[in-house]
Image (cartoon, rainbow, N blue to C red):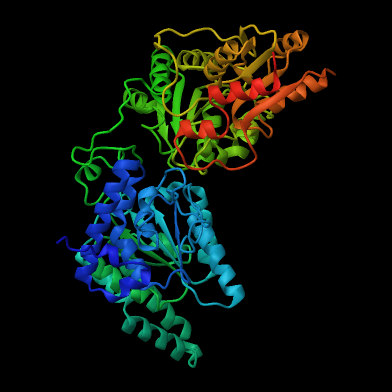
Length: 626
């Protein structure tokens, strides 16, 4: 008879309070096994969640959630949290169509206190929850769990500064999984943490504080001596003085995999008021050897074989990211002014080879996209040619920097927008479906989208040669449709697209990865007796007005096709121009409607939004009847 797992008896966090430390350690192993089983099938953020299993158990065992609130920074640490909060049976559906989210989602569970898919937001959100609690006069504990990577994000520091000055009751748990802040967890620092979190210590300290209220002459010097003693010990043994200067009481570092000690420390911290910071040391990928050995690869990974750690679906085709990286490396060999910049995504954006060969010209600025853009502006102002590569959804965080620091000054910065369009299972926080809308109206900004990998290479060459201002190039996740990626660089003419197929009945006006889809749709329409033209616009801004004028003259109905929000996107720009000419050409827009796209494979999402060839052909045929 198979022994029942302890995990199968945990229906809510309250059930944790009835188990011993040994049983909770057993539970940690079972949770790791469940996470590995499901993520090996579905893909997801494996290493971060494996690293916080004991911490998650200890938090839920010492808090009373959902009354108490935990805000998970980024949210890719939250898989154990989901398993412990009434979603154990649904966990196998994570990141799938109709399943649960890969990130905290306030619409999914009352235990998800705040939705988090991008880094550095947790402290600000937690402080807002704490302020709301104080206004309402309730007593819940508020905890923000922040990864050490978030410490490179400016919003984290804004939150720390405000929270420390507010003096509100708030616990920030700093999950240090790279040992980048404090390399040693020694006996002395553990002893100090035990001392300063202990009830006796804090009772004595409080008694002294109250006693000195009645002796005004000694109040200030006695309190000053006690504070200096505690601060001196912390400064000597642990790296906490900086946090204390912001108004936090610092505790740690502690071993994030020692459940017994975590339970003790967290229980005692629940009795202390004010802004608190607990520094926890964890191992990213803990418990799964391949993830521990290569935490970067297993940070976010597709389906893989558990026994070997190898990908289940390995494409022989190079991704757009890799094509970008190889092309930039080739260009940098000829030009020593080219610099590369990214925000904590060196390998995933394709910068790995460039960073290795030209380390003096490569800059990973951490999770600080706004800084990345303004830093690039400074490099451009110094006479260099900066190339920034960011995910589309993360570029959103640097919108003002793009306008104020780059476009307004017409600085020749190249911004390569990876993961543009629908990205699949990471869901609404990561779909890149707004960049055309928020970039194409910016003066001085060139916005392009390649139809395939070879056109990406041509656009990158155009961009680094362009001197009149900034250039952005958007391209999707994964590989494209080029049968063979060449070694040369094609020619791109500023602001010019191409009518690649004539059509007397209708014209499909498309950009980027939608161009090959439009060609397939045109072939399907031909089978129905509809003569469909296809335009590869290439440029979202500036729009090829000459090409559009030709389409107006042709008079055939026009369908714009884009993997971007319809509102304010490429199609909108076409309609705006046609309207300005006084033409009454019949124009229809196909793109992402006014809603956040959900979780599903990329191909399935394209079908849902009518962006696959068959759906486009069906829609066009419904309007154009031969």
